[in-house]
Amino acid sequence: MTKDNQLITGKVLRVTRKTYDVSVGGEVVRCVVRGTLTLEDNEYCSVRAGDNVRIVMVSDGEGVIQEILPRRSRLSRVIESREYKEHIIATNIDQIMIITSTHKPAFKSGLLDRYLIIAEKNHLNALICINKIDLANKKDFQIYVEEYGKLGYGAFYSSALTGEGVDGIRDMLTNKVTLFVGHSGVGKSSLINAVEPEVDTEIQEVSSKTNKGLHTTSFVQLLRLSFGGFAGDTPGIRELGLWDIFKTDLKSYYVEFHQYTNDCQFVDCKHINEPGCAVKRAVESGTIFNERYRNYLNIYSSLKSAHYE
Ligand code: GDP
Ligand code: ZN
Image (cartoon, rainbow, N blue to C red):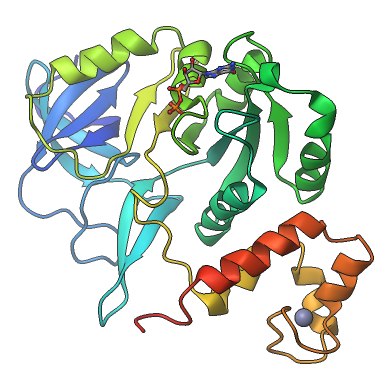
């Protein structure tokens, strides 16, 4: 593949306790880290799924990571402790694809909003896929396509069963790094299989190179897509510990509130029961989607007040 000691660039697909699967031109190289890696001003930096790295091959299929290249985005959570501590789950993500389903399990905009909050908190683009459209009447879901579309989140229908929307998804994934999120059973793996039929064999390839019982530490595993780009399936936001949202911050993750906040009577208006609230006026006049606002109230009352309470 290369001369000895020559640095080659690859992308980390998977992190286990001691090893890293790095995709290099379609091959998976099992890598280790020796010594300490640093990144920009960080004194010490752990390698994460999605990292672009420079490696040296030590034998066929095995290498050593020498360098982490600068990260352009990250998905992370705050570990609750006395000090603010960030735990990065994956890096260099271009977009998250939120998968919902019309039925089985039933569509709930409140769950969708929770994923959008995670996307906003991490400054990641979000796309909304309404899967299992074969089980539903489109007119019942058109309101969501319109309302979320107005907020700038591309929303569309799909069916892994009939193939509707699958070509569109493939286009959206091409040459991007995409994380699929969504509750169990909505069709994440079916859709990944529909866009990339080779995915099954690739998963086997990655796991055959993996010793059984080796612990994955990040839960995010990327797959290289044959048409360009990478996609990863994830467990839920709770499993990833991403639901580290606090009452005080919640309103900042609602893009449609921003234009009204200067018009609220109180500068620190929470848009709940304060007098002279411009957000509530916009909800009453129908400019802000009522269902999103109701979800906001529900989510707000479920959250903790502040960090480290
Ligand atoms: P995941 O847990 O999100 O990965 O969901 P799966 O891909 O495992 O799908 C859960 C179930 O829903 C399976 O029985 C799939 O066959 C079914 N399913 C997935 N997509 C569709 C779809 O578009 N329409 C219908 N009718 N069933 C689907
Ligand atoms: Zn207000």
